[in-house]
Image 1 (cartoon, rainbow over the protein chains, first blue to last red):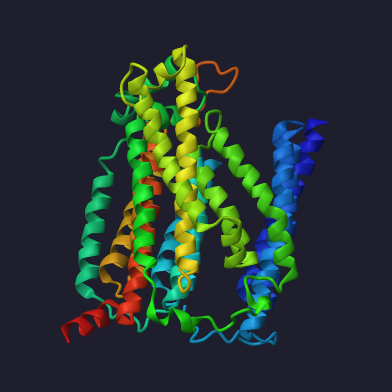
Image 2: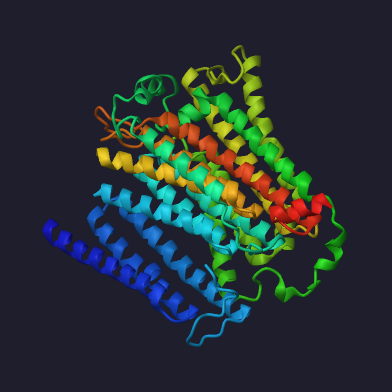
Length: 109
Length: 329
Length: 118
């Protein structure tokens, strides 16, 4: 039983790590601000669910699992809100959702 | 395995620091500083410093970023022109780096239990805490009881900073009246128009306040205490202010209440100390506060941690309002 | 373990000097404050690194602990105080920067010195 749990949590953690990596590469390589944000939000949601799920399986049925579930809930509520607020602010500031460099003024950093 | 984590986090720290200093856009620098604080908090956790990690995350990554952004909103968001390379400064800094790097070879071996820092006073504190104070968190015991004087000084430093910022930023300014273009335009205040942040913000504020209270009173049994709790409660009110706007926040917690919080916290701390004198002991001796010395210590620690939490909350919120409401103060 | 310790201390040295360079060489006042913040964080890293004991845990007594080995609690107490004092200083510094901007109209050090000279 323990071995099965170990294998499942190993799979979850690896998949979570892969999604986080994909999110990071996407945040660097995507052409526009909005697409980059979309890639980065993968890290916060799918990545968090898989990684925390893997750790929860490892922790078994203890208080730690409930705390991890609470952390996951909190992350799932706040990260999409942050992405929305960022995208909304960009929209209001005038960044157009079209391919090509996001017109940040004097992009130099 | 943790070796890999440590190395990775430390490398990220250096990269983030270089990026924060190099960037010409100050918003980017401030955001990178927030990321830096979070990374160094993770590092502290790997080095077994749980209380310090909590404080650094709450204060450094949370409050400090908000204060910088508040200041940036009142000044410029980019440097005016690229700094000309100061060759002399670079040379001096490089030479100093080499000196410090050379000094690292004489530092005590990492994790050595026989290093000088581990063998003088620390074993005495670790041994005496269960006997004299009987509180599981040794850091809280040392901070609140054994080294209570230092914490008293720290509370007064925080209080002084709050007063200082209020002095600096409450002088009314000539241009103040002209800088409010949206007088009475409700939809532009805070984030009122945006449904999602508003709903989620109002949903989260009570939970953050609850967690702040938990951290305040649980400082004896796990990582926590007055400073972290003060920063968390201030963060909850700042979230409310960002979502609902300055006016409603000042209606909810008026400026007078914030001043009262600031003052009463420091006063509570001082009074606990003086009560020790009146009850027959010395200043800040908690053992005489109750019949049983250990119960007295517990009472003293709870009271002064409450005082610290009150002052830190009041000061952080006063400073935030001083920056955010600059044209109305 | 030896190499990990050396790496910690080297990162401390590098962060210290990055912060120091920002304070000394940068012209923008907010950038200087950011550098000061980095400098302080590097010092915190040094102290906490020196307090770590290999095989130790966080200095909190838990139930059913037999012969626990704790990391040193004293540097942690010191750094807790230092973090709070650091942010107090930063807040006060930012207040001064805002007032300077209102009086001089700029927060670049060379331009402020120009205005003062006139």
